[in-house]
Amino acid sequence: MIFAQVCRDPRWGRCYESYSEDPKVVQSMTSLISGLQGEVPANDVGRPYVAGSKNVAACAKHYVGDGGTHQGINENNTIIDTHGLLSIHMPPYYNSIIRGVSTVMVSYSSWNGVKMHANHFLVTDFLKNKLKFRGFVISDWEGIDRITSPPHANYSYSIEAGVGAGIDMIMVPFRYTEFIDDLTAQVQNKVIPMSRIDDAVYRILRVKFSMGLFENPYPDTSLAGELGKQEHRDLAREAVRKSLVLLKNGKSSYSPLLPLPKKAGKILVAGSHADNLGNQCGGWTITWQGQPGNNITAGTTILEGIKATIDPSTQVVYSENPDSTVLADKYDYAVVVVGEPPYAETFGDNLNLTIPAPGPSVIQSVCKATKCVVVLISGRPLVVEPYLGDMDAFVAAWLPGSEGQGVADVLFGDYGFTGKLSRTWFKSVDQLPMSVGDKHYDPLFPFGFGLTTKGTK
Image 1 (tube, rainbow, N blue to C red):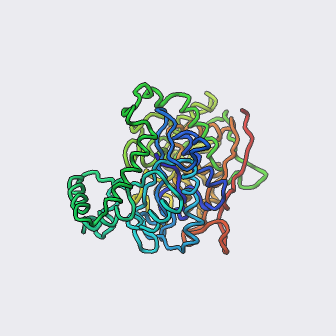
Image 2: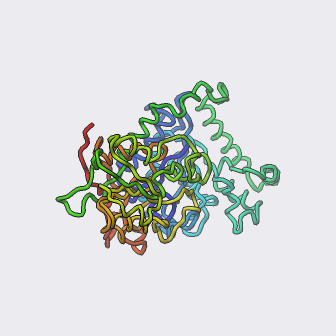
Image 3: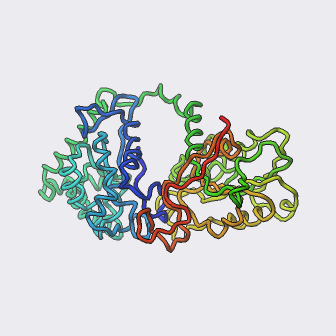
């Protein structure tokens, strides 16, 4: 299990926070660990802790600096001095250890040219010895392979460097017999000291004992019924409502568009993401990269949420990419839902951060034809300034997941907009990386910005 990491540059995948030195932000990020593992007892602070069979071990990842890579490229080099690394990227790990996190996963990325999977100073000297982390350190998927370029070019060296750096458990999905044979030979030949193996085994056993795995090695199957429970979907729907950020409401402050009236003659719903559950969920949904469409998992699309919310007398016209014939009709207003396709990790690297086609043309054509609110589905801020003037209202909905009804709840005023930007929204990618506090801070929308409305519930 994971918790959100610091990400200073949105060109790398999903970005959650632009200013990690704020202690409230760090506390919020790491509070998920207590939700997964349970609240650590006062006398056990700093030690791996899992409360019982209904809890799971948490993993703090990706250690460290993964959110600050050059140009935001996944697995790239984080170029920053020691003070910057410790003040910007390290605070979540301090707090994770205090909360008793069980494991820490090492990043594919490098720090000033040194691969994290081979960084003895940060893994052993700092994380284990300085911060007194008592859980175990795990590699990423084939992480030690990528110590060399190309990966696996010198596997014997990669094993020596990775295990020697202090990694306790190696994620080897396929060629595990090669790893076992080579590691055994290196220990027998005293290339890797037995003390390093003892440390790894001690740490792994400590976590397994804290989890009670020797007494109860298998999951409690009675908990399977918890998956997809209505109360969990209700909570997810609430999270959608509270995470929506209203960035524009009306072409002037005197004529707000939102909340939308439920009773109208005819409304238009348009865009690639209006009726697409997979696009709402993004990557790491059932499969690694996720996938578009409505067959990947169970849930409610935004279009379905709109239809369930409006007055029965209101006619809804839905067109993913409306042509001139559709746009020639008269509408009271339109809801345009566009955004990014699902992605994860390197597949999300994007140096231009534009809204994928035909999103921009749909925004421009629909918003010129009628009053419109644009709902953006994305894992990060995208370039919207060229289209902002065409919009009557603009909502950042991020990735609402399975509960698209939560978007409709707020668009139509059952609940008010309360969300604030968790990172700075840039005008153009030329400004990146940009964070609140920078000397030349000139965003489209600043960190913490978000308009509010009142709801009826």
